[in-house]
Amino acid sequence: MPRWLVLVLFGRRPLKRESNLQRQIMLHASDAGYTVFRNNTGVAWTANERRRQGRDLLLVDARPVHFGLITGSSDLIGIRPVIVTPDMVGQTIGVFVALEVKTKRGRVTREQQHFLDHIAEQGGIAAVVRGVGDIPFVQDIP
Image (cartoon, rainbow, N blue to C red):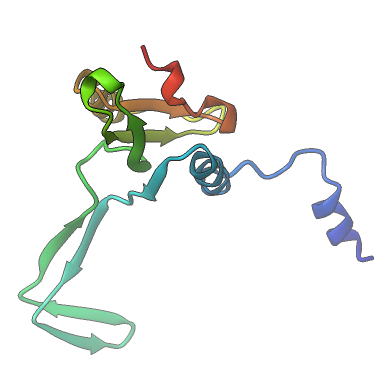
């Protein structure tokens, strides 16, 4: 086995990338009954006409295209079905879910915390999730 492969397989620290953590959290959240979606946010550019100039691309009549919810919105959003008690007609409802995925050292921005606070104030499930053990379950909600 090549030495570099041994170092990758048996290294001292496993790779703790946020994207790997997100995939793991999405799988576990799904097992718990959540339906979650990756919410990428950002800006791209489009134009009516594009021209190549060597390695550059010239955009004519360029305009920004914003995607995702809003600045600070969570990495994972979705719903969690909740069975309403019989005195509430026994319907199943969906509760909005916002999961902000961070590594152990990752920091929540002011905008992200504001988004999470707003979702929680409106009755949704909102949490910073640093591992699958941090995924909130309906029975944990007051």
